Each structure stands twice: as structure tokens, then as C-alpha cells.
Length: 362
Image (cartoon, rainbow, N blue to C red; front, top):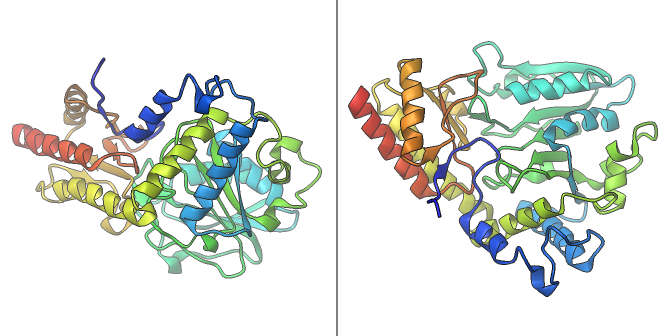
């Protein structure tokens, strides 16, 4: 059997090894049902228990009560870009978007199809090297909601202080950093996240929303695109991505065993520090894309003195068992995605590789 590598891909991303081993151990016969989890009916008691547990575990980790629901949907965060304005942008109101990268731009593009939009702040000038300061944010009059992207996978930036706008509902795409540290989830009316970076495998999208948002959605939009449909049916209106929800629930249990979100924060800060320290002490050989006060703990983006060297770095790293380090084409360079399931050991091995590569090529 081939040895496992250190997977720094931006998504689908690394999963905890013990979760994969648990999946492997019960893949053929889930809890003595005589069936694989891949074969079980979503109407069975066995699957309904997984569905309930996953919602309860996620709410427990976020410290949320009965005034919130968790939905397990399909279509990725990209479908949420359209579902949100479809359900929550009524005629005559405006949706405010804070632009911090490519995904927030895509969310705005979809919202424009459904109603009035307003860019409340943007850091596009300078190629999204930073998160806007709170005093740069200018809301429209009476916005229906404000939308942010909490972490920017492509550019390696992240909100350090999550904003709040009083009575105005705050919505967030947290696909690439949900559960990376403790935060006040009650600040948000709606949070959504494609699971394939920090929560589980691809195929399931998590939506966490206040109950009142999941009632009385407009009746003139398709049934499957109304949040109310999924809330009323406990995410079981149609066949859910059952296997993905099952693995996601195991990941949530794993996070609880690691000390919950406090444990995740400690681990994530330790991992990122290894790589950022190497960048900062390289005398300019490695140069970070993000400004220091906006640096992400999940996606570390950096450049080398030449594109040729960057290609060599990615190629030699792969041979050393460090995969997925090539940066996104819009930024170039290199990117190490250090999501929750990436180990401290993996980041230490990358740090040693970076030091050795600089000695050889600096």
C-alpha cells in the first residue's frame, strides 16, 4: 500500500486519519445493519440518527440553541450564492456585500440577478492583500442583509475581528474556516459552508440559520431552492448526500475529542506559526501575499523570487510527499492549506523542506 502524503490541497482537502480508519472499518457493515452506509435508505432509523447527531454536534460546537437549525444541502457554497438572495432579497431592498476575494465576487454576481446590491467595502485594489478595516465599511440605507466571506482561500486572508451591524442580518460564507477557532456564532443570522475544506468530504453543504429565516420564504421560487422546504423536512425532503453527512458527523466527533474549538485554535495557530515564521525569516526569499494583520490560519499564500523556482518548489515538494502546494492561477505562487485535519507534523515537515529549499536555491 502506498504511503500517505501530507495533503495541502485547498479542497477537497485532508481528512483526519482516524476518521478515515473508522469509515474503512464500518464501510461494509454499518452498525450491524448488514449494509454499507453507502447503501442505507435515508428514511431508515440508522440514517436519521446520523442526521440528528450531526445537527446536534455542530450546534454544540458553536454554542447554539434551539433558535438555530442546521441544514445539510447539496450544490456547494456556489448554490448558496443564489439561494440567499432568492429567499432573502425582497423587491425594494438592497443586499450589501463586502468583497475580499474571488468567492465574495461570485456571491455578489449571483445576487445581482435577483435584486439591488451594494458593495459596502472592497479590497480588490491591491489584489485582495487585506481585509477591510471596520471604518471602511459603508452600508446602504436599510440593507436586507450584509454578506461576508470569512476566509479567502485563494488570497490567504481572513477576518480577525468578525464585524457586527446591529439589527441588520449578517450572513457569512465560512467554507474554508468554519470551526477553526471559537467565535460568537450568534452574531450571524446565517452561516454556510461547503464541507470539503474544514468539515468533511465534498457533496454536502452546511447551512446554519436562525429559525425565523427558515419560515415563510417566497412561494414563487422552486421548492428545492427554498430553505423552508429543507427545514420542515429535517434536510430529508429528497435523498441527501448521506455518505458525506455521515463522514461530516465523524469529523465533528473528532473535533470534540481534540478539545473542541479551543483545541482547534491552539493546533491551528501552532501549525501556521511554523510556516509564517519561515517566510518572515527568509530575508525575502519567501514573500507572503497577505498583509500580516490579515493573514489566514487556513491558507498560507507566498511567492518565491521567480516563477521557475516556484515550479521547482512544487515539483520537489511533491516528490518529498508534500502535495497540493501550487497556488491558485489568479495569484500564482504557492499555497499551503492547513485546515483543521492537517497535522502539526505535516507543517513541520513543510517547514523543514522550505528551509532546505532556500539553502539550496537562495
